[in-house]
Length: 80
Image (cartoon, one colour):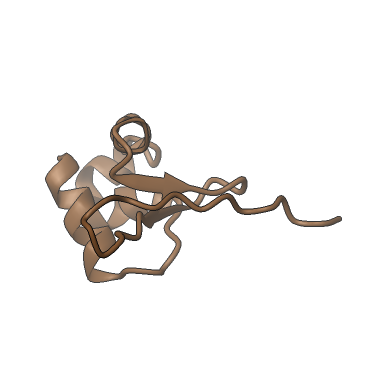
């Protein structure tokens, strides 16, 4: 399942995805039963540093440096 999520984020690099959007795009049948089914997979990918998430709960493909290392961006919280 992680590979499918990574492929979705790589194909749409720079596009933020919510948990519900990832869940819907990967498996609509499972989405109808539980719209948040992909959350554990997304959190595992964040812990493995393969993707990043922002303060609003959106997930992105982690940008890579020229040497193949992954760069993690710190995004400031939105001002109210």
